[in-house]
Each structure stands twice: as structure tokens, then as C-alpha cells.
Image (tube, rainbow, N blue to C red):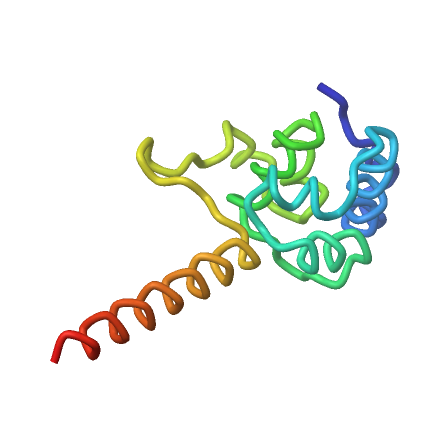
Length: 126
């Protein structure tokens, strides 16, 4: 696993976005690929890379650490969390799959289509 060079403590927070972007580009991954692996939106990853998120969630940081091969504790510290909380990233319960916002929209659109088909089927039986 890679680690994040913290430099002095004052610039630790500013290095989160740089570290995420550097790791993503080094792996040759797009924002969409990273967000899909991490379970968040590509817009959110972009905001993180631009240091526009004040307090990213530990769950998202855990997903990004996994997706980019970075240390979870290193990302937590770079995001300004206490180093004591640098244990393993939080995991969703086993049966729950993480979906990005874009995937949820696709699922809802498919569901709307199914409901429309069902309504038309039921309407034709009257």
C-alpha cells in the first residue's frame, strides 16, 4: 500500500486532494472508474481531488483507499481525522452492495419503465 507524504502538519489537509489525484492518474483510472470502485459519485471524487470537501466520510475514504491502493489511516489523517481512528475502514454489512448515485438513477428509471409497462398491461385487461 502507498502512503501519503504529510509534509508539515499545516499542509496535511491540502495534500488529500493532491494525493487522491496523483494516485488515480498513476493508476491510469478515470474519475468514473474510481468512483464506481469506491461507491460514490465521480463528482464527489472530483470535489475531493480539488480539496472542496471539508469532512469526507470515513466510509468514502475507506472506499477510495481500497480503489487506489492507499492506506486508510493515511487518508484519514490527510482528511484531518484523529490518527487514533486509523483502524480498518468501515465496511457495509455483507449483503448490502454500495451503489453510486448514477447507478441508483439507472435503477429508478428502469423501475419506472417496469411500472409503466405493468400499468399498461393492467389497463388493457379491463
